[in-house]
Every structure is written in structure tokens, then in C-alpha cells.
Image (tube, rainbow, N blue to C red; front, side):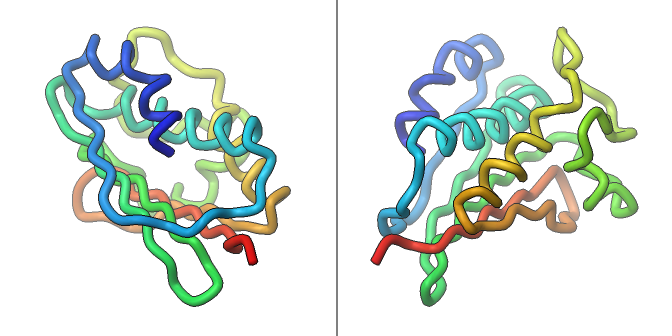
Length: 141
């Protein structure tokens, strides 16, 4: 996660966005490249939809045999009716997009596929403000 955040440093600096990582998580058995792509896509969305000068929170934790990665921003959020559809290829939600270049609608579909390939799940959770994504991965034994 920390490497992925470092790789996105130019995008965060350009928008004045800070990414805070809280907590620790055990190692996961993963294809590092695919996991990095999934995390990068998720964070790129958070950066693109967050207001300039804002903050994105990454929370790492363990719940039994599961590693939890929460990505929380304070952008326009996701309409409740779209929480599941947001992962469909080419679906672009109804909320305003802050990015200068609109995405293809594939980023979150790729996140879901790559996380599923690792035996995990990704969800968009209801949030009062912004978007809240949770990745659940089995931890390495």
C-alpha cells in the first residue's frame, strides 16, 4: 500500500491531496503487480473524485483470517443504488467527476477482478459523505 501511495505522489501533489495510512495489516499471498494495479486504480479514483486540498484515508486492519483495506475519501460519493453497479465494466456513476480527463469505466472492474483472483472481495460501502471502499483479502499463513 505504501509503495502504491508513493507511486501516485505526483497526482496527489498536483491536487494538493494527502493520503494517510492508518493501522497495520499482515502480509497477504499475492501477485504483487496485480495487487498494486488494483490498489492504484482504487486510489486513482479517490484522488480524481476528491476535492483539491483534501485528504484520503487508508485504514489497514486484520479481522480474524482476513486483511481489511478501507479507502475513504470525501468526494461526491456513490449513489446508494449504484453501490454494486459501480464495479460493472464501463459503468460510470451519476456523481460529478472532478477529474480533468474522464476515465474509461474499467478501473473498478479491474479492481474487482484482481482482488477476486486473490480470493478476496471488494465492496463499495454506504457513506454519509464521500466514497468508502473495502477490500478483504485472506492473509498469508
